[in-house]
Every structure is written in structure tokens, then in C-alpha cells.
Image 1: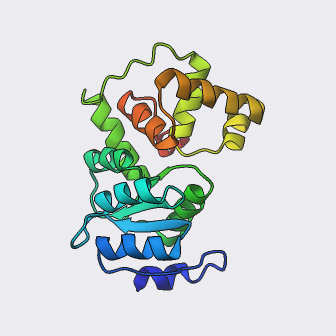
Image 2 (image 1 turned 180 degrees about the horizontal axis):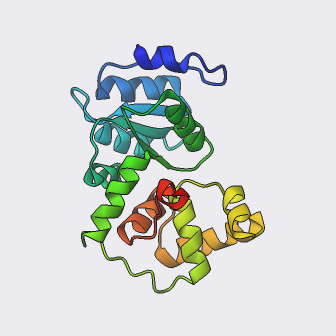
Length: 204
């Protein structure tokens, strides 16, 4: 109810349904076909991660955004593996949550800065999956890092001084070389290999 009250203030967002547990969330998603399902990890009867996997298999058009209290890189990686498009901490501001929803709706990923930092530390400590990115060019690595941080093709083009079509081509090459076919998979690899950069640290 609190989330609904906050999000109802934004005219471009419409809450079409609410659910008390994971099973009801999946059932309502099938009936209502929302653009985005905002799920908690800790839900009765079916966890948010399992519900996400079910939706990924049965309703590919429904994008999932995880909202959780867990500040753990392990949860973030499991979220990516489940097929979710983003991970927002429960103490995030309404503005951050809305930005996450907008990013996911636009086909990008979104992760709260605190979670991204934890995932980066996870890699620094030597717990990444060690995927070999040797086949990527330096430019492709730059594009991969920015994709993983949730930037759109237009934003990446602006940051790197490239055309949007050139960025799209780089993304296609990256996916083909890494045998990954979605943004969530690219994000997981970027985090595991230490390519992702925390925006707050860049700003400082």
C-alpha cells in the first residue's frame, strides 16, 4: 500500500494489480499482463526469484524488477540469473525507484548504487566467475561496462563519441562473442569480470 501510494503520484505510471505472495503475483501477471512486475525476494509460498524464473519462461514480455532489503552481491547475481532486469533496495528513494522502473521499461537494467558497489567488491576479492573476455576489443569492453551500468545506446554513444548505430553494432558483436543474448547476462559477466564502474565513484 505504501508503494502504491508513492507510485500513484506519477501520472505516467499505472498500478494494475497487487499480490500478497509469489504464487498470486504470477497468477495476476498472467491475467493482467503488466509491462513490469515489481517483486520482493522474500515472499510467502513462492520467492521473488522463483516467480521471476516462472515469468521469464511463461511471460517473456513482462519485465521484472526486484525490490529487496538484502544488500548482498550474491543476491544481485542470483537476481540476474533468474532473469530480472534490476535490483532496488527498499531504502531507496521514490525517485530512484521510479528511475529504475523507467530504465527497465526502456529495455535497460538498473541496480541501486550500494548493490553495484558490493558486487564490485565481490569481484575484487576474487570471487568472480572468471569468464574470459579476451576476445573483446577495448572499445567493446567500454561498451559492455556502460551497458552493465544501465546506460541506453543513446547515452553510451554520447559518452564515447560514437553513433547510436555503431553502439548497437558493438553490442551485437559482444553478445555474439560471449554467447550471451540479453542485457542481464551481459551485466552479470561485466560484474564478475570487474568491468562495471560505480557511477558515484566516477563522479568523485
